[in-house]
Length: 264
Image (cartoon, rainbow, N blue to C red; front, side):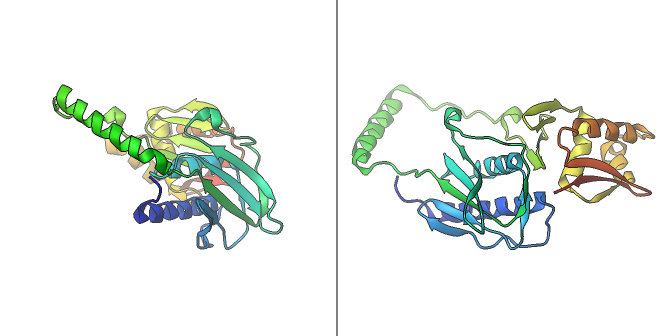
């Protein structure tokens, strides 16, 4: 129906700020601010930043798709990234529940560092008020039919396989933690269980040194297995699988451990 719950609108604005936060993090900026989200028109918002940043279209698409999937008011939307100086569109795409209506291009082209704002316009979710009477009448009739012909069934418990999968994005990488799968520039790469557990630790702390002892403990020793050079071997395998994104590498921090380095 036309009009929306104020709580859902407020929640949408928090999700938009989260999009800005993740864009700054992916750009290697963990200190500057996401400026207040502006409502610039009906169903249209603008995200702006305190400092200049760079972005990769593939990461932006993955981030908006993942976060706005949590918004009950969102179905279709258009994203435009504008240059602050002249308001020209440097990148844009359209996301739709109907995949045929999506418009996405140039995923792998990294944009140069500059002053950008992100405009997101949502498709209105209202129902034409002239149809409300017909809708309510139909719902009443269907409710009556359901009451007559169907008896209540015992609710089924949710199966573990039907739960939402955890998705992480960094650089151009989309990491499905439960299915142990990477998508890099539209290339799909499967991970072993050990590789997935290792990468999850790195992905949750990008550009931070992870001590070798911590990796050994959390990936192997907690399961009662002590390793020697196995860690180096799995790190090497992960490096090869991440090679499709040249901005990402697992580097050795001599005498300490390793770091998932994401360059801007």
